[in-house]
Image (cartoon, rainbow, N blue to C red; front, side, top):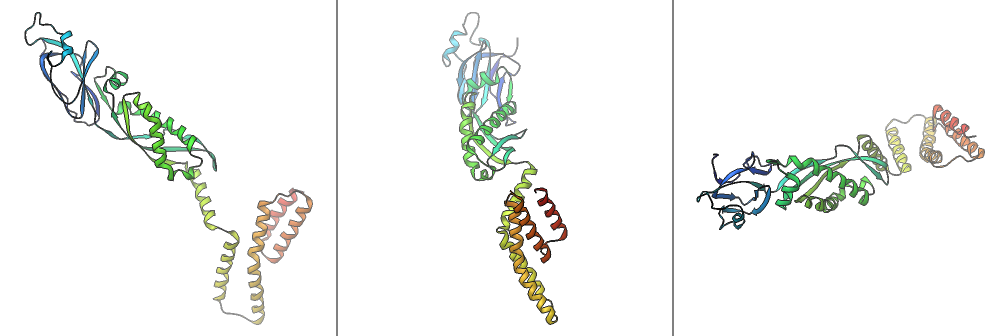
Length: 328
């Protein structure tokens, strides 16, 4: 006859055990009068004949009919003395906070951005859970497993998180440029959406954090380029500044003859004219559509003037000329 269990308890040395069955290999014989010890951070569910009979909170519980009335239906004194044995099992549930569980997107999610159009996003963060309904969690998630760790359910919870993340981003975010300032709000929104899903499993989502939502490297390079263009500001002012810098360096050189002085004066005048003329030509080239032959000839004339003045090179002139003539 197997040894009767007189003290029933469980201590978790790993810190990641959510559920432990005692005995671990199936039903065991408990001694009538055995003591069930439940810690403050635990709940214990008592099973007999495959049915959950009661949930025990923290404390010392003596398995006697006067202390646990439900046992009166299971045990009779016929054929037994005060040490009547009965086969059963106890599931200990760890009610502590399982913190810093990681979530992330294995595959990038497709996002319609108002400025960048269709892009792919990756995200990662952390969340924490606790067991809220012991019987529901035990029957719906754990089943008959003798040992259940937080890692056994984390993959399923991650899939729920990524699904809701996709939904919330589509409903509440217009562009990735707004994401950093909305991380806290998004965390709250996603947590509220997930809460019902977790409660259906007997769990409570204690907190949900978004550490990062990022775009692919090639998109990040485009964003960096755009930021650099914005930093330049007004192109006309930038060109004037560049010209001023060049003239300042030229002024540091010794002056030459009168003819050279006149040449310098003309160069100064040309220096102030060039930025405006180049900027005007660039704006016309980029922002206007050539609708007629007359527009094309006008542009060619202005382009020839820039070439004669030395504002553009021969290669630049030929390339732009070729493009204009193709539209005739």
